[in-house]
Image (cartoon, rainbow, N blue to C red):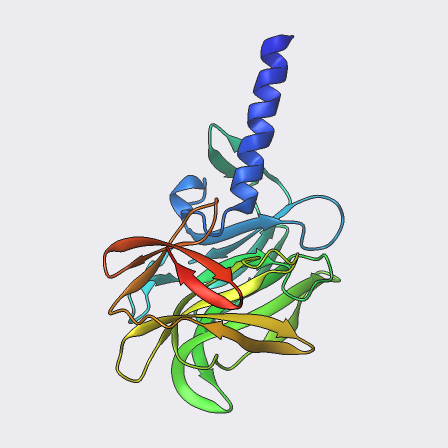
Amino acid sequence: MGDCIIKTVVFILMLFMLSSCKKTESSNISNKDIISYSIGDIDLDGADELIAINDGGERKRLPSGEPYGKFIEIYRDFKLLDGKVVLGEKPDYSFDFTNMKPSKVQLGDVDGDKRADINIIMYKKVKFHNALAKRPFFYNFDSQKLIPLWLGSRLSRPFDDIILDDIDKDGIAELIAIEELENKNRILSVYKWEGFGFNLFIQGSEEFKKINFDNNKYGIKIIADGKEREVKIVNKSILLE
């Protein structure tokens, strides 16, 4: 009986850690055509769903190097076995995003309505910016459809990557971006949802030749010019420790 309780607790902890991580490597998932996924309650039914990007068996890459996919899939049938996510045979929903070249999907409540909003990084042209670039699109899942929440054509600057995290502990996820300056250096910027979209909240004062997010479920860390740094907000300033 005691062993059973311990195994149950370990399973719940593993599932919580998987659901709360900012990005999970697709090598941990049973379907090898999936390049990015995230887990959360996207329809407010009290149960988690898994939303994923599927490349359709054709592993192609953006000019920046990361793979992109064709389909956005939603699974209700999935489970965690020995640290690996095992999916059901077919997704419950599949949406063709071939022309948008999605490369990353993540979840976070950015507007404070207690729903896990869906962020998908796309690579495409848009009406008011006729150039191929990464776009930070946001959706809600409702009535069996992906409903646009915010189809931002761009942030303040071109970005390499974004993550969602409640970095200031106000109960709402912020958008943290690695942005490219005119001199080609990189800088960190934090955006907050205000009304009907994102506004720049704060930006870092340090510039780097290269920044990458270091995927860590216990806070935001980056690798900046080869050095690991932890990201914090103190008095509306970005501190890198």
